[in-house]
Image (tube, rainbow over all chains, first blue to last red; front, side, top):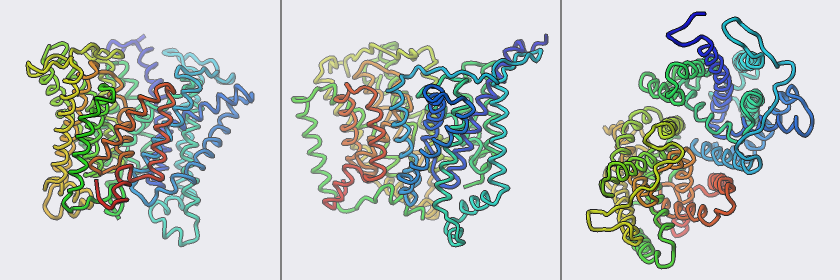
Length: 295
Length: 323
């Protein structure tokens, strides 16, 4: 076998794979944040908590209803989407005329409530969730072992990101959405129900988070704080990529996951902080973010 | 549009001669002087440290309109450096506190240079991410003690005469530090410098067009806020003889936002009231355990939805005088 800079290839490709997996979650979550931000001008601090909620819905379904992983992939995003619907209708709606920072504060409060309740009920150690039967096992690629489930996560995240891009950039509904982002009152004057569009956007954004949560359930344990630290990294990803472009946040998400994975191989001490360091550098070189439009 | 929004965030402070604020200040000092006779001094010192922290935070959000979600980094950095200086280097408490404050100031300069390149929501996310870096550093670095933190920090003898092992002497020192920080902030927001900060908050392009350089003013305000947060953290480390990960965690950054929001953004006394309420809540509701976090989240939601002026802001509106 070959060696690269004194690193055994198993370790290198292993971390690369973990990086791609993390990158999938960065991409899905930052995509949801970007979609919500585009329409509501709010940074959804509850995104990590709703991602956790998605994983818990999957766990509940399996534990108490007996619905499998495949059902959870549909039911969890719908459930969390409905939660998002309620949040937007009852609370966020009142904040649109105020400073955007209030939206951040409100969703931060919601995140504390959701995470706090689950922590009281389930502790912080986490619950196991089985990989569905069809995706168990893996294949030997010669230089490394590739578990099927991880392949599935990477592929399906990519597909969802591309589908979202297609829906927003290439369909009629997406055109309404983009138009309403640019000029809501004009679009409203054309007879399009902008408030409903906003509600649906928020519900869709948090449904994406819940979908990521279901994908994550078999890899990480289902735990109340699984989204708490993740969301901060995703914020950094969003700052690096800029929130202007959907493909941009997808690419940034995956790329940063890989960079983080590689850092774990070459300089493990920095693996927790490398994304934040990159963020600082990007802010100096290109403050609007790699794919962002200047404010 | 932009000016309307920031005005909603922090109602402009009236410019009439603030005699009622002097009365309120006298009342606060009088309360803090007699309070140790009927309240637990350690609780009061905890309140004072957090009150100073919240006042420093309020300087940014209330008067410059910048929401920092990473202020725990400065509190924590001050605490760790102060604890390390007192315990390992054996410095007397005044020098330990000075070391911690200087470290937080320096950190504030670095973070400020990076974060003021973006505004609004991005500013909040960037400060949060930078503070998370400090958290991971504190978790991993050998000298910070990881999960244990730095424990058993000696309180020592201040200036060679004030024995801080006496609870009341310690309380007096903490009170003086708090009042000094409070007055410095009060002076700052009522100085010409403070007026320009408010002008930048209300309308940055116009301030720029008048020849002021907003970035320099923002940076200076950010560094000042970081320094005072570091002072609060350094003092807290000496009082509790402990520097721990709690103080650098993002939860702490959220807590200081909550204190300020609850007390009243952009009010002089709001952060003090907010700190008092939140610390009291943590103290007296300790038996409900982690439900405290849920309660804090609920207060966040209620404040944002129905109570945006905060306790002191509403009070000031009621009697038509800004506090």
